[in-house]
Image (cartoon, rainbow, N blue to C red; front, side):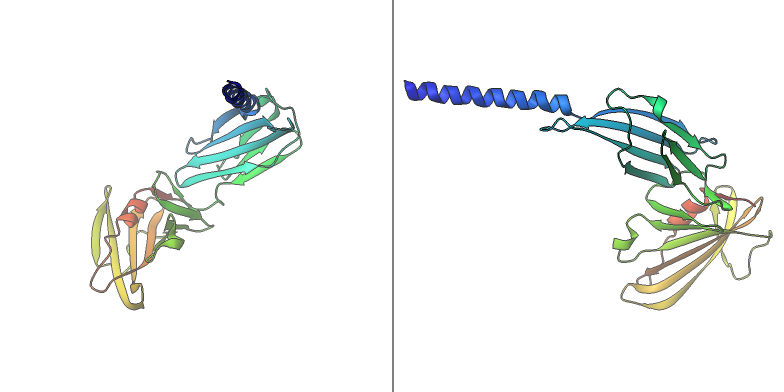
Length: 243
């Protein structure tokens, strides 16, 4: 009889400890408040989540921030370092999201700290539609595009898009394809490659109101096989360049 009571006592104590742990976990679980602001032209959104929590054993407060910038070709997220300020219940009065007029950067402004995230340096070319699965980098004079996870691919490819002055297509572009309502002229060259296959270069040009969009595709393919360049046509349909 005593052993049965002892077992029931231990079981009851275990249940009480579990309930206490759950209550404590609910008490110290992170509490978040946030806000979102669109860029001036509406292509991007920036958001910040302000998280506060208490240590499970020590009850010591901890605070951190999550920043996100999302839009065509941009999916950027990071966690911020703790910033001094009130805990639990603090609202938007202590933080401001401020965009630059040209969407080149966004600032998360706090009383004593300002965090700036650069979207892209000013350049003539930009994405005007989202193209999923691409890693897009903008430089001063072109876009550099690779597939997401390209470092782990056996046959990675990359593309560049830039703006060329003039209206006439370059000589040697002996093929053509329709992209949207425009006729795109292109040419493909092949050189014997290494273990990844032959080296392929595709050059394409699409007319625009500011000049000619010049695209180059570089990659590899097995002998006798030619890529379909579907990603190149998707990119040409999603980019605009201007002076």
